[in-house]
Amino acid sequence: MEIAVIGAGNQGTALGEALGRAGHSVRYGVAHPPSTVTEGPAPRLSVEAAVRSAEVIAIVVPSWHLDDALSTIRQADLRGQIVIDVTNPLTEKMGWARGFDVSNAERVRAALPGARVVKAFNTVFAAWLRGGGRALGEQLTGFVASDDGEAKRVVLGLVRDVGLDPIDAGPLDAARLLEAAGVMLVRFGAFTSLGWDLGLKLVHPPPRP
Image 1 (cartoon, rainbow, N blue to C red):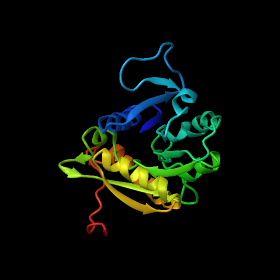
Image 2 (cartoon, one colour):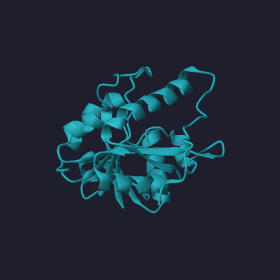
Image 3 (tube, rainbow, N blue to C red):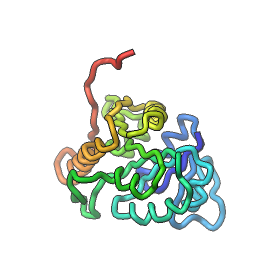
Image 4 (cartoon, rainbow, N blue to C red):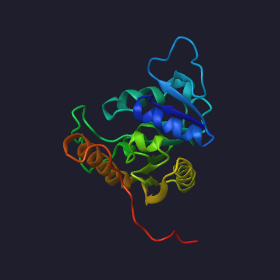
């Protein structure tokens, strides 16, 4: 698939690399693209150029830059487009930016009318995306939430492609819980003796046929 990753920080490049290894065509959309097209399999382009003709768009920016990213992205016509929100509501000091009343994913949906918004990849650290979806020898869980069944099916496939165990987490408002889990992991990594070598694995029965 043609995938545009908005944001080329550690998390964004890790997701792009994982998707690229799975055979997808990836390009990054950045606020300040290089003056010449970068070499390599995943060029860095303007956000507008990156989203053009992409089949899937993944927003992977710090939460405090989300509004700026959305103001640029919304200039494109994304009606019917699959948009994955990978953000967590953190402040620059790793605090929780908001409570349970609304998720970043729901904010993305409100800002991009007609887009098929999906929450995914927000509970997996960059190192584990680069490590085939595994942490300390364990396959991690990739939770996916959306109100759009077909978009959810596509993203569950992408989650499987990068090596995670795909789990349907329900409708988009479940992103409020998934984002709380993502914030919890970051705060564990930043403020406890556990450090960053941790991740989430859901123990569950085999999926129904």
